Image 1 (tube, rainbow, N blue to C red):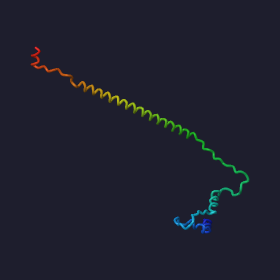
Image 2 (tube, helix red, strand yellow):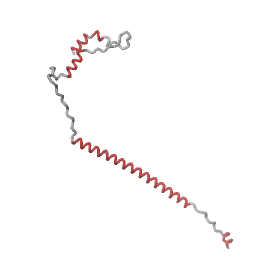
Image 3 (spheres, rainbow, N blue to C red):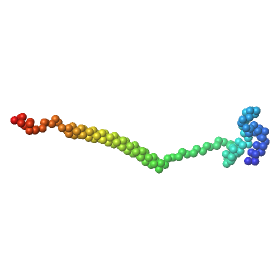
Length: 141
């Protein structure tokens, strides 16, 4: 941190344009200044555990082994698959049942309508014969 402050003080004249307000037209384009020591410090922080001595030969690259799925995850996947297929079959069965129920309800309604029409047709009396009165009886005789 002390080094950064010292580098900032030394780079003071170069940084004046970088901290200028954006709206000024008299200054040239704003330049970004990167402190040379800052990048080295970051690299040093990343490589803190490694040796700084150059290697004499190739450094072996350690390959991380892939995670092998356990039997437990296979069982869970099988259960999830069975449940998914069960839900799909249940949904299909429900859908088919609803279609059949609608068809049956439509048939019942149509039967009720035909029965009502027949009742209404039979309730209307046919042409009634004339009433027998004494006058009509006397005429017949």
